[in-house]
Length: 617
Ligand code: ADP
Ligand code: MG
Image (tube, rainbow, N blue to C red; front, side, top):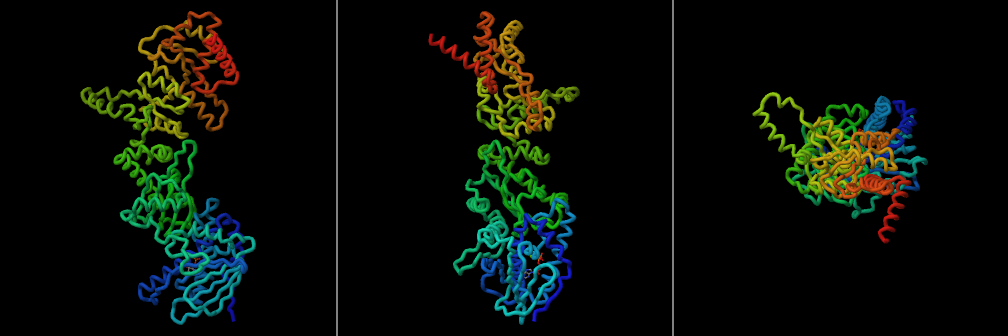
């Protein structure tokens, strides 16, 4: 006769709540059930190691199987098993009260939940099952088989039964609404996601000796870095992230004290200037997958990397906000940041060439890290490089020659002592290009005048340069190559050009734009458009935040180059020709700055056609 019992913890109300709250994460039930099997095997192995249980020379493993007709999903282990008393105690009492406990914590956590729903345990299987049976036989001598069954709500039965082998079999009768968990594909994916590094073989629908386990019981990240080869790192990356581009480089974390942390962080090849693809940093706890991309544990910008982190010391059955403020977690997070910064600095120092080839892929990550984390910024600020117009990579210090200046200045300061130190230094002007194609004309003028600029063309650069100006307070002033450009390009001696400026302005159809004439060092270009850096940035910021008045044309000036033959001849033209030339010069300048308006474009085409006709004669 089967014994019946009432479940003492009031669980009638638990199920609906659990189902509702955990709906999106109910997948975790399989992890919990398989992990229990793994625990049972680990415990049994320990007992045999201590001589308290007979040795076992078969294969320790977990077998998962699906019976669609019977609508069951079964997980079987050959671990230590349970006696009748143990089932009563561990399942009916501990598992159920564990779930109640979990629920109260979950409730307290409010909206932000508990990471990976860790701690729900055996009971989580009721999220998908209408009924669960346990068949188990303890390793203990003379132990009898036990059959337990419950719908998880109020009552259960328990009885003796015949079982041949030691171990536990959990038979989940899948609810009609959860039929997907009877699909092999679904279960395979779940095992792949949650169980892929669990320490004993896991089989799905085991078919015999030659069957292959689904998991990797000794993942590379657990090994000593000394014993890992480059190929193994790449192979592990491919298998884990299904990314067939090799990673750029990686960091193997391996630490036991003061906290346990193992894992590998990969820098993926991104090469995407417009958008950042979020990477995947998987968090494990003793080889059991917990969740992806946990920003409470590692800083968000590090989530652009791909990797595996196994950290058994993170308290997972607490709320996310608690986790974020946990001292231990903060230490772990700091350690990871330090390792990443060390890796980058090391690479910069020992293999500059590789560093430069990787820079395009990692620069956005590094810059984002700087914006988000001052600590990180101070660790990497001296290895942030910029590509210049010759394709050479330099730090800002190198680019502005600050390194040299600073040392010579300190000499001067010694000689001069007081007074001099008080003086604030003028910021170094750094010209930058945000669009190498669109700003090609400015670039060629810069080069012709022997000037250089850096390329800042990722979406994060506008924010990053503002940050640098602020952080390095007054050390650098960034100007886009088309901003206040005459300051860089004009020749040393200038003449008065008032008349020319007025005549040109009077001939222009665009009455908004200011006109200025200056003699450039180089005669090649008749005019360029000049926009105040700060009003342009202001406009861009407004546009970025979707605010009105995002007018980037504010404070636009056309700067005429009096060294250019066309401009030099301008004064001697008649009024009709002045009009024609002024507007055409303006259109040309505008074309290399940004697009023309439709009317302007029409006018430009008409003028060009007139020119062609005259040319043909
Ligand atoms: P936890 O694993 O966190 O202890 P669970 O709810 O997952 O909580 O399981 C409760 C208890 O039930 C376990 O501690 C264990 O003693 C027992 N148990 C569950 N599954 C098995 C199994 N497959 N073999 C042996 N014991 C098990
Ligand atoms: Mg468990």
